[in-house]
Figure 1 (spheres, one colour):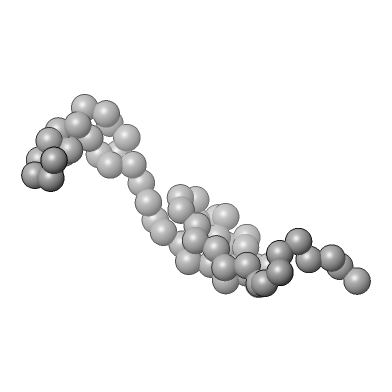
Figure 2 (tube, one colour; figure 1 turned 90 degrees about the horizontal axis):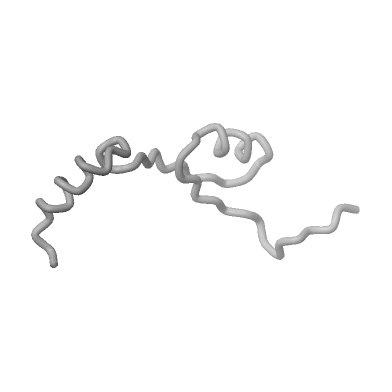
Length: 57
Protein backbone atom coordinates (compact mmCIF):
# COMPACT_ATOMS: atom_id res chain seq x y z
CA UNK A 1 0.00 0.00 0.00
CA UNK A 2 1.61 3.32 -1.06
CA UNK A 3 2.09 5.95 1.64
CA UNK A 4 0.79 9.41 0.69
CA UNK A 5 2.97 12.37 1.60
CA UNK A 6 0.09 14.78 1.02
CA UNK A 7 -3.19 14.49 2.91
CA UNK A 8 -5.31 15.59 -0.09
CA UNK A 9 -5.06 15.22 -3.85
CA UNK A 10 -2.58 17.60 -5.45
CA UNK A 11 -3.80 20.63 -7.39
CA UNK A 12 -0.99 22.39 -9.21
CA UNK A 13 -0.50 25.75 -10.91
CA UNK A 14 2.31 25.31 -13.41
CA UNK A 15 4.16 28.43 -14.56
CA UNK A 16 6.54 28.15 -17.47
CA UNK A 17 7.31 24.89 -19.23
CA UNK A 18 4.11 23.24 -20.37
CA UNK A 19 5.79 19.83 -20.48
CA UNK A 20 5.81 19.84 -16.65
CA UNK A 21 2.02 20.26 -16.68
CA UNK A 22 1.68 17.52 -19.30
CA UNK A 23 3.67 15.09 -17.13
CA UNK A 24 1.53 15.85 -14.09
CA UNK A 25 -1.70 15.46 -16.07
CA UNK A 26 -0.53 12.06 -17.31
CA UNK A 27 -0.27 11.04 -13.63
CA UNK A 28 -3.83 12.21 -12.93
CA UNK A 29 -2.90 15.45 -11.15
CA UNK A 30 -5.21 18.45 -11.60
CA UNK A 31 -3.09 21.12 -13.31
CA UNK A 32 -3.65 24.67 -14.54
CA UNK A 33 -0.90 25.82 -16.89
CA UNK A 34 0.05 29.51 -17.09
CA UNK A 35 2.03 30.45 -20.19
CA UNK A 36 4.20 33.04 -18.45
CA UNK A 37 7.22 34.64 -20.10
CA UNK A 38 9.51 37.37 -18.80
CA UNK A 39 8.40 40.90 -19.70
CA UNK A 40 9.96 42.17 -22.93
CA UNK A 41 11.30 38.68 -23.68
CA UNK A 42 13.84 39.00 -20.88
CA UNK A 43 15.49 42.12 -22.33
CA UNK A 44 16.31 44.20 -19.23
CA UNK A 45 16.44 47.52 -21.12
CA UNK A 46 13.03 47.01 -22.72
CA UNK A 47 11.57 45.79 -19.41
CA UNK A 48 12.79 49.00 -17.74
CA UNK A 49 11.19 51.09 -20.49
CA UNK A 50 7.91 49.21 -20.04
CA UNK A 51 8.09 49.69 -16.27
CA UNK A 52 8.57 53.43 -16.75
CA UNK A 53 5.21 53.54 -18.56
CA UNK A 54 3.45 52.25 -15.45
CA UNK A 55 1.80 55.21 -13.72
CA UNK A 56 1.65 53.53 -10.29
CA UNK A 57 4.33 54.65 -7.82
